[in-house]
Amino acid sequence: MTTGFSSWLRVQWDRVGAVGAALAGLGALALGWVGVSGTPHIAEQLPYFISGGLVALFFLGLAVALWLSADLRDEWRELRALRLILSESAPETDRADAALVTVAGNGR
Amino acid sequence: MNLTLVTAAPRGARRAPVLGNDAPWRSGDLLRTGALAGAGLAGLALTWSGAAGRADWAAELPWVCAGVAATTVAVLGLVTWLVAGLRRVRRLRREILPLVQAAAAVRPAARPAAAAPSADGGFVTAPGMTRFHRPACPLAAGKPVRPLRPGEAAGAGLVPCGVCAA
Image 1 (cartoon, chains in turn yellow, red):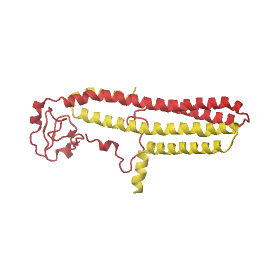
Image 2 (cartoon, chains in turn cyan, red):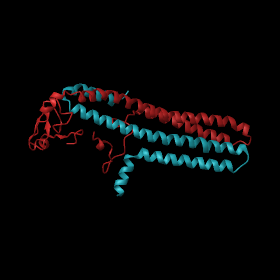
Image 3 (cartoon, one colour):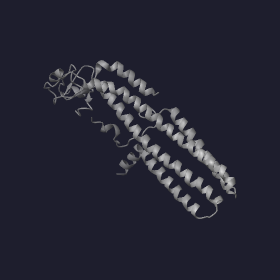
């Protein structure tokens, strides 16, 4: 059970990181709100705007980026597997498919 | 299509890759994103430090504006990461589309020949193939397939087709 969960954590590290970043962002937002609401002086509130609001914004953006990049990676792997299956099942087009594999493998 | 093996988490699996052939990003993407996000975070720390040391809010405003700019730079770094991945996935999808169309455009007249009964559990293969298929598999249709002989799959290192789930 523990081994399976740790394997899942390793494979899904980016989605776990996304949840962690979202929690960190919400925590920063809450701390910023507590800091801002605790003082009537604008000069004391503005640093909380930076450390709470802007940092929270970054962490929430990081959470979205991590989650979407995990989806993109999964789609990439599925498409590559599909291409491998199609190219292996069509021997007459192997040469052209091998060229495609090389192109995608190099990116750009 | 049965592609569950691709995304399933096998026992003892390694960490999902960020770079390389199993991911749509290259080292240049990681460097660019890291540089922008790092610069943005450093700017945020700097602006917080600058704003926190002052007693006059009017003197803090430039630091707040700089903090907004630093956040924008950091988020821009994240956006470049996503855009790079999205562009490569779309390019790969465009490359695969002709292969899928070719597999789907197999002549229907060729299907009865491929559906001939076989000797080893109803599977067929063809010269040059590294997988064996069910006779009705669309990826075997139209190919010069022959029935799989008993024990041939293990001996020749043939693996089941991922499409017909042989």
